[in-house]
Amino acid sequence: MDLGLAGSTAVVTGGSKGMGLAIATTLAQEGARVAVMARGATALEEAVAILRDNGAPDAVGIGVDMSDADAIVKAFDTVGRRWGSVNSLIHTIGPGDGYFEEMDDAQWNEAFSLGTMSAVRSIRAALPLMRAAEWARIVTLSAHSIQRQNPRLVAYTAAKSALTSITKNLSKSLAKEGILVNCVCPGTIVTASFTEQLKDILAAEGLDATNPVDVMTWIDNNFHQPCDLGRAGLPEEIASMTVYLASRRNGYVTGATVNVDGGSDFV
Image (cartoon, rainbow, N blue to C red; front, side, top):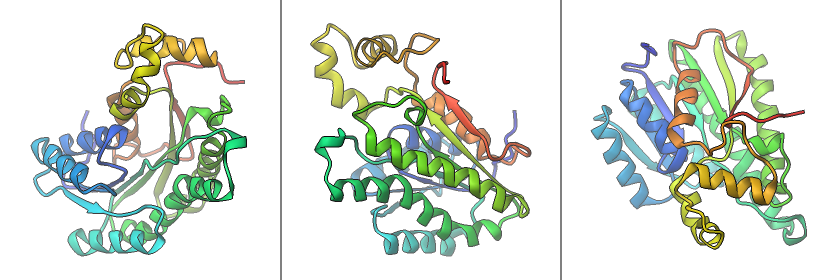
């Protein structure tokens, strides 16, 4: 299927690792020019090399602290000077986790700064560039925890819930301009950072944090939140849905909140 991305321009925030990098790589493979935004210089350099190897020879990495409003504006100014317009914006940034009793006001503010306001600021900075493009799509990444609460993720989930609402609202206000706006809610995804953080915890239960079936077994045992397919997902599976929604091929899906979670019974 031709997604109509050849020669288009795309920005992926948080695009140097995990799901963001998988999305950026898929965009590159589809022929898009890709800019990734993230903090770590080394990870950005590695990501750009991967993107260039996958079909985006002019891929660029832009170092930006997504909690810094001015830095976000400057990052999109850089994109504007380079390409003049943006067709696809995919926002993947998320905050950390924590239990309610453990979090002070500063941590709550940080969660909303990264989980919600970074998207608001990125979209605001990108819109002039998107309006200059022939077509434009926005996709935000929320989380299935907005529908399946987890006490460990209280601020994370609150920030992502706000992001989901903002995304839905923007789909209405931008529809008249032909800018389609959607939200993807990943389930449990086996990324390198997930594996690194939890490998010892899973190993203590005789499980492998790189194995999607073992990961879902651990999720079910400890949080009682299984999925119908019986395994965790992979970053590439999030990328497939996200890139379709961010593509020209998607001409009629807007305002959707799409679960990519292996099947869950949300009520």
